[in-house]
Every structure is written in C-alpha cells, then in structure tokens.
Length: 483
Image (cartoon, rainbow, N blue to C red; front, side, top):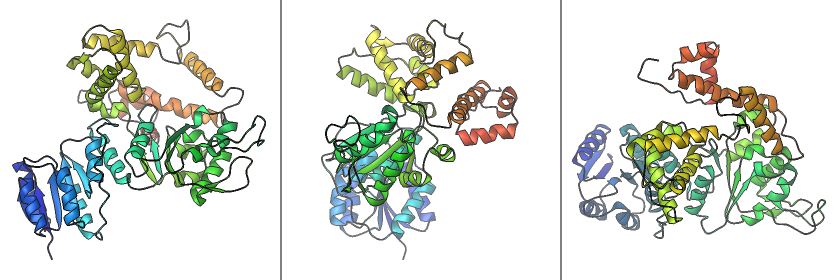
C-alpha cells in the first residue's frame, strides 16, 4: 500500500518541489499552504507522515505539534525551518517531531528520512515540554552548526555517552552544558572537571572522593565529582590528560556503574551521564600508550566534532551580535560593527576560535568610545592579538622572535604548568605533531591551497603532504585566483 505524505508550507515553490520529488519516490502527496487544512486532514485520520514548515500564515507548527501528538501519537512529523538556530532544533525534538531539517534542505536526505520513519516501528511520542527557556546557548546558522544542532536534539532524551572533539576555544563545555540544560537530566547538577588543571596525583581523589587518612593531608572524608554529579551530568574536559590509573578506574565506572573512593572499600553505585571532551588526537595517544583503547571506545559512543571558527566564518556576524548583547547586559557601552569590520573578522583565522572572538568583542566594547567599530579598529586589535601571543618572549619585538625562541618559551611555560611533576611520556612525538599542523596549514594558506606549491615550499613529496593533510585533519584552503 502506497504511503500518503501530508505537506504543509506557505512557499509555493517548496510545495511544488516536494510534490514532484515525493511523487517520483512513489508516495501519494497532499499539499497545503496552511496549518488549518493540515490539522483537518490529520484529525480525520489521513496521511502516514507529515512534512511541515514551522512558520505558516495561520499557526506555528510548534503550537500544532502537541495536538498532533495527542490525537495521533504514532504519526511521524518532519519539521522544516529557515530559522536555523539551536533552539529550533531543540524545540522540534521536545515537541515530539520525528526529525528536523534546516532550509535549504537536501531532497535526497529528506526522502531517506521519510523512508526510515515509515519503515520503523511506531514510536512512543517524546515528552513535550512547554517551559523551554528563551536563551540561546549555541549560536550560528552555518551548515556545520546545523548538523551539531540535529545531533544534540536527538541526544536530549538519552543518556548516551558523548565525546566532543575540537580545538581549544570552540565551545566544547558550552555544548555539554546545552545538552544537560535541555535534556532529561536538566533538574540534576552539571559538574565540570578539567583534567589538565588538576595535579595528576590528585585526579582520582577529585573524581571519586577520598576517605579520611587515605593519603597524607586527607584529614577528613571528601566527596568526588561523581558523587557531586549524581543524577546529573559529569563533564570531563581535556580527557586526554587523564593519568592511566584514573583511566582504569573510570573504565570500571562505565562498565559496572560503580566506583570506590580513594582509600575506600565499599562500591558506590552511580547514576551520572558522562560527556567527555578533548582537543587532542586520542588515537595517537593510544598508539603512544598514553590512553586506553577500551576506555576510548566506551567514551566515544557518540562522537561530535566542533568545527574551528575559521571553518564557519559565516557565523561570525551572529556571534558578534550575541557577544555585544551580553556585553550590554554587563554594563558595557553598546557598539555596532560596520560591514567592513565584520568582513575583516571573517577573514581572520582565529587560532583561539570563539573564545578569542568573544574576548576581542568585550575588549573593543570596553576600550573604544566610538559607537561604530570600523575595520581599522578591528585590524589594529587583531595585530595586537598576534604580537601579544602567549609564546612571545618579554623584550623580544613582535616578528623578531626566531622559531627556536618561540618553541623554547612555549616549552618553558608547558613544563611549568606541571609544577614539580613532569609531562606524560612521548613528549618528543607530541611536540613534533603539534608543530606539523600549523606548519602545513601556513604553507597551504600561503599558496592558497595549491598542494603542489605547498609541497615544494615544504620540501615534501606531494603524496607525503596529502597523507599528512589527511592524518592531521588540516583544512585545505582553495582560492579561485591563480596562486
């Protein structure tokens, strides 16, 4: 029996495209431009699946969805929207939609989703929640961010373990917090711990707590982050810096759902959702013997990679507006950025990602009296950003530092961060790998993505360069101009 698809959209062109595409795919299609007709069909028991826009002339689909789920809870509803924000994806999930597609959508993907929805057993409706917050925890409408919104929306009502990867400053903790705040554990605590910020010999105590007398200085019982996060979410940031002993204990928690405190004997059951994050290549750490492979696969149930800001530069205007609004709430003077200033920021590579952009906006709002921020102001601040790099050596003018001096200063800072301890083994390979990425990226940028010229510049075989680009995940920049 041929399935009937009910399509509702006030855009005649979209109705025509969907009618033709779905008919070619073998479905019976009924189209309408308003929510009233759609509801009449649904309440009469017609249709096997609904494809609807969010904003229609007579009613918002999010207001209609609860009535649909109450009248026909088994009816899959696929929501489309040009309002491509994080909250749109979350509302679609919370209101019981089967899936969400941002406009413009891919017809092949749409038809695949419809086929999957019709072939699956009828699902229980997702719990509707009418007290959604109005805040916007994640910002951006780029294709890369749309996929992140969709993944998060699907994870909201699950307890699956999530592994977030991405460069420093891309917003890994913000994503973890959004997953908690809009998920089923929202009423529980959100507890974050940064592995790189805790002395290595105290990480187990921080995670699992300790008993009185468990070690020198343990004068009373202390609760760990697992106990503090009970019923909620535990965010393990920089998981790649976790020592092996702590990795073994964490693996036991994930396998058995229980742990013991340091110095304790009685197992403690735990009910915590784990979200881990790293800016390291954990597979390389596994090869170096620094990270347990079995723990990696336990944590990497759902992988989510956050793109660097340079790969979603079209989101910068939205992010700038967002940070300006927050600055105003904190008492900073209102600012407006002209188009050339925004273009300058879109062209900048943002090594510090969204965190660097936020710091720039706050600094511009605080230090400049002008109401309108121009390109000249932005360029001056970005040049200052480069010269004030944390690897700059006092007394060395910007641009005059040699590579050897920069590495020496960086290594001094890195070793100092461990206090009296030492970094984990394998430092030589780690440093060389970390230097390879910016070196290859700089060569590709200078040659506008021309790999033949970049290979020649680096003195590498072209196949070797291609292999390194693939292994290191270097973004290849291409230019329409001849290089």
